[in-house]
Length: 370
Picture 1 (cartoon, one colour):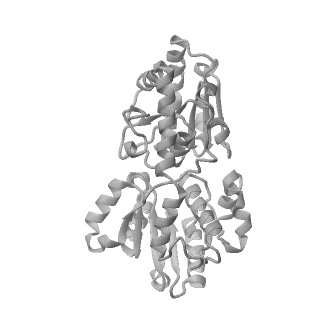
Picture 2: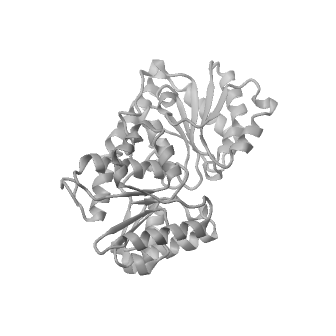
């Protein structure tokens, strides 16, 4: 499994958790993790991934200059030359493989984890299309992209699969009694445009004003993450509009400590929120989701426990939706919280993900080796 990213996000966490699960469940397996040292160190900050240290003999590190496509290609070429042996399986997680002469010796799986092609620049789109064409097996996260790709690449339709689900450790992301929850609202994820973090942040004064008007006290906002918009965010909250608002912006490798007691979770992505790793973690912790009603979002944020806004929401619209959450009767809100956690426990287990990918590898979960 090859993950060349230097930053940590939902996909990196999801596949690392899957790989670690396999190492613990399948004795003497030969599934290796190819990863950057930077990502490895960030993953170790997460409690449930600290066990990666136990399997260092199965981790291969690739080093390249961050942001340099030529440096990455050079490292991948080196890796291909050394490891492309007959019968091997190369699983590229949002990595683009450029060397068909070497990968032809092996079975190649390409996992496309982006929710929209519009998230990629021109080079990224070209690389993705080439990978779709070259891969022996294509694993696609988003249902809409899966349908479109299956139609366009009709000649290899039997080799195109839709990712079964994302996963969350429901034991690690647990919840407290509803009466112990705080009036805390949380964003968790990368600070980049697709998450609409700037529009959300600009709406915070409006939200605070609405909650003050309905006598909601001790309101706190958490923005947990990192990314290229951090400086813009830090500059924005220097405005006097935020002077009397309790707002914290930081990266937290253990967000479950906040999520288990928070009440509202924001997932306001463009295109789709399906299947957001952070949203699953929030639902597992019993949070009430306020989400953009786009793409396949309702496959994860069900109407039974979710509140929706349109993709291009205004600050006042988002504030009014949040106010609706706090105006909901306590018993009804508690029921929504329970339904959210129950839904995640039933549908997003690591076992289902493992069974799916092992089948792509040509392995069975109950076998002891590869």
